[in-house]
Image 1: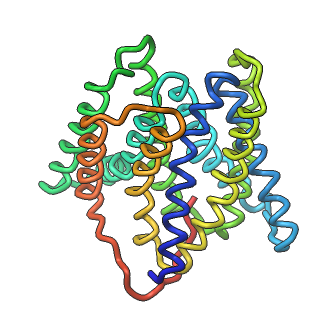
Image 2: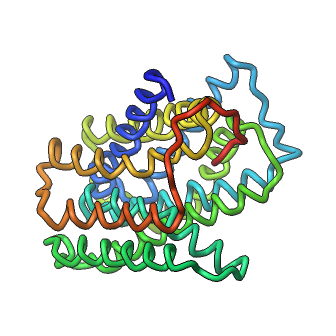
Length: 297
């Protein structure tokens, strides 16, 4: 991983960490469904424009089932669940709960393949669960009405990401840009039926619209382009490092721009969750030769 790719990694972590900040701004005003419909629509339009410039084809006839599967589990459902949680939870808490996705993926993979969980993985699961309990148990936000459901929704979103990742490993290979572009259009279709059930509770200000635009174009469209560039140049293992950096920026942006309190439990819980996730996944960053790898949603 050279300096340019390391900077791309930091930029990607900063962008994805910022997505929780923007959801925290937009969800209480627009509601989860309207916010996410704008997010995936803006991302799809942005990627469509990029696709026209780069002359990238979607090949919908051949891959429509694949796009629908990933669009549901990798975008529509987790985005909606996180946006639902963002009405109550802080950006800091959301970003740490999101970091449990690899842990759930390892657990579901072990159960699905009926492989025994090793002592190291078991310790990681215990640590990860303990970190989440510490994070939310001592946070004032956990005492708010509906906080329990919001926390469950955020964890369920992380589980969705792990399901999508496991599916992608066994699915037919699709060009990475097409994966990102096609799933955004599929997610746009999936979120539409939810709009009548979750109308906007307020009137958006220019600041809210700016957050929505940033969430769609920057945190979804541009972030995908950076992520797939990293996978192509340093391989998926090193690119996975972004999972461990996201909470750092999620906590930082929440404190800087929303005035969220960062207590000892926030930092301790985040650290324990990340250590547990690393143990479960067996994650060891590699900074050797760049490697070309298959795409990931």
